[in-house]
Length: 157
Ligand code: SME
Image (cartoon, helix red, strand yellow):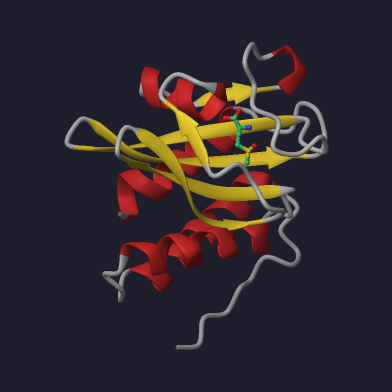
């Protein structure tokens, strides 16, 4: 499998996301294994956007359990309603956090994390996992990030 990543000159964030989605589609459509696909999705996001931490937490036994990720070691389990990830799971909605210090109950896996976005993944009206992306800068994520990161799951999985 040879997949070319054409992102080098993409200054425009939307264009970069559009190319990223094409690459994800090309990589996951020939593979049915969920973990393999999630692992590649984290690597592909990392190759287009050099965010500090990119990973999945999977709903297992009423907790979020750490799944495939790119970045430093992280908390392994997060309870329903706790932190940004557990709150996105509870609310069934993407959460953008401009400054993690101002999010009540934020779980600091790394002090380098300054802002984040958490996208819950819905299957049959249940959240089965969340995509958590952390930045080492404040105010990194906006509605454009939300729009395209949500599309990974509405159109591809
Ligand atoms: N910041 C997250 C915890 C996970 S780590 O950042 C990887 C949260 O508060 O849910």
